[in-house]
Amino acid sequence: MPGPEKVPLDTDVAWIHGSPSPRHLSDPPLQVHHLAPDTVLVRQSKDLTYEAPFILLLLGEDRALLLDTGAVDGAELRATVDRLVANHTATRTGDTAYDLVVAHTHGHGDHVAGDAAFADRPHTTVVGRDRTDVVAHFGFTDWPSEVVTVDLGGRSLEVFGIPGHHAASIAVHDERTGLLHTGDTVYPGRIYVEDPTALLDTLDRLVAFAEQRGVEHVLGCHVEMTRRPGRDYPLGSRYQPDEPSPFMTVDRLRAARDAFRTVADRPGIHRFDDIVFCVGTGPRVLVPLQARALVEQVRWRLGLLARRPST
Image 1 (spheres, rainbow, N blue to C red):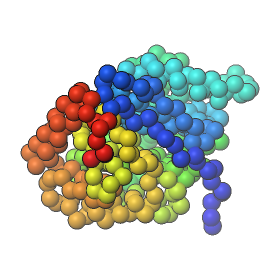
Image 2: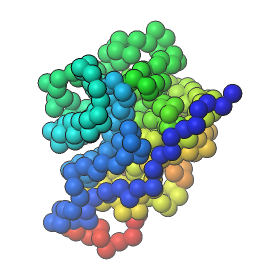
Image 3: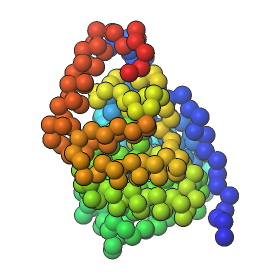
């Protein structure tokens, strides 16, 4: 039986993508976009952090879920979330508090740096960053394969573990919109593989889940590819004028799974049309990434990036 009709998402967005020179910074610190009335995607500026992560806010009738707090101090994000929650609850009746859960797609620094700004927020739970904290908060009894339900009040989400990039990585599925958020596990960019065996299993489960649930949009936390097949922006890039959309299809998720199967046992950097797998942390990965990053940083500081096509 088909599920209820999904709320359409507005994914046709021109995202902020940094400035070509540190002498002419032009991005706001955050870009806030309503994918739907109760589904908000925020991007931190590359003028603040080359990571430029995407942060997702899902609002229900009784509580909201914020996925990640970004790569910089969270004061600006806290003020933005407070405003979004206040607007969402402006017509709400009753005396029951509206709760906020601050969770993380995974525990790396560029996704948790703003946590402190939410620590003293009333009616707010900040979930810990390691696997023990994640398992305890969401009530997993069979990590990572178990799918648990999170009730936001009139809006149910499904959460399950997706280790491979990070031991505590989670995926979040919003049936209402057909959105599957995969954090740093799948996105148009460089996937840093901590545990290849775990990632193989994760990608198989992600594809199976997406097919079974009729997922319409696959979202990750970054964009690092250009629109040229097989070409990514260098590590540390502060200006990315030729980015593709952060939203991927289930077909692209399946293609990423199939591509990784061919390289999972080979440490190094493996480029495909719209994704790059960086397997391991040895010199085959680190040396070319860091060398290319150094050249990019020099070019950005000299203001040379505006004079070149995307590379």
